[in-house]
Amino acid sequence: MPSLTLLFGVSMRSAVAASTVSIIATSTGAAVAFLRDRLTNTRVAMWLEMGTATGALSGALIAGYLDQRYLFIMFGLLLAYSGYNMFRTRKTELPGEVVPDRLSKKLNLAGSYYDRLLGRQVEYQVTRTIPGLIIMYFSGAAAGLLGIGAGIFKVPAMDQVMRMPFKASTATSNFMIGVTAASGAVVYFARGDVKPLLAGPVVLGVLLGAVLGAKLMVRLKTSTIRKLFIPLLVYTAIEMIYRGVRG
Amino acid sequence: MTPNVRHEVPKRHEPIEMVLARLLRFGSIIAAILLAAGILSMLLGHTELAPRIITAGLLALLATPIMRVVAAGMIFARDRDWRFAFFCLVVLCALVAGALLGHGHE
Image 1 (cartoon, one colour):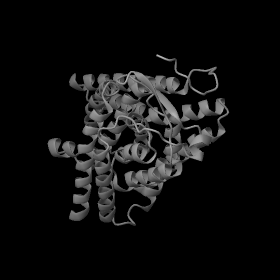
Image 2 (cartoon, chains in turn blue, purple):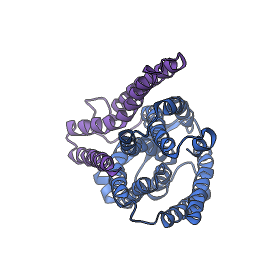
Image 3 (cartoon, rainbow over the protein chains, first blue to last red):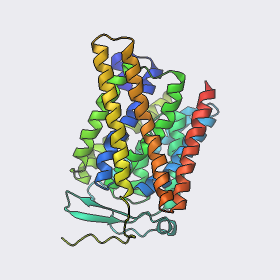
């Protein structure tokens, strides 16, 4: 999105609208490959989407009553912390033994997928089901309030809090962001912020890129994907804190 | 390789992942075709037609994740997994409420 405004000099609102539709393209394009490889945990996704959807709704409702500066700083620090956590665990392929909590068992959230690189079936449990939902609520609220793609909060929540394998976290997060972005995109469409001649080429490019990227990801090592994800976390953290401090 | 043992009820239907994958693939193909056709007609100088085709493509893309929640809800309801069907309903209600509120916002 910054590159859209910087490179092409388009108005901020149509850039935001185009980038929101691009997020849907990323999610939809990549989700097919992840679903086929069973990386996506659809049950966890539906459970957590309740958090993001209601969070985004309340975020949109209270936007304007809150000072965004402090929010940017707060979320920036939070991201920096999860970036640090991810750096610490950068070498681990899988989360090890995880004891599921009661709700996770009741909702049957455990999953399994075939890891092509490890050459075996990975079975995993999910824990801290309620804290995960609460974090998703705030991540959705952040998306509604700050207009940022909240996918960046979802991966650490599933990976570090709910202890899901990293690949399952990224695939499930990708699956979920399509719905969050769609709720924003509906509004942009209604307002007429989506400029077809601008958004069309961008979205088509992103769609094709997402299909290819997902095919690549299922073949990569977890530690490699982590290493690609950490700079993204750090960059976003710094940018958010900067926006907060600058005001 | 030991066969994969999963403690699940034997599936009478296709797994939900495969149904949703097919739905999302269908949505992205339709969107991609419309977008490509729109961009092509833009290059050919059909300034009237091009934005309409592209908008149709963008709307197809927008509808895909929403349809995905509807489809997931229907599959959970079919499997009598009422809890998860209810979760899907909550998500849909939040989406509709957001669209209505956002509409009146500006």
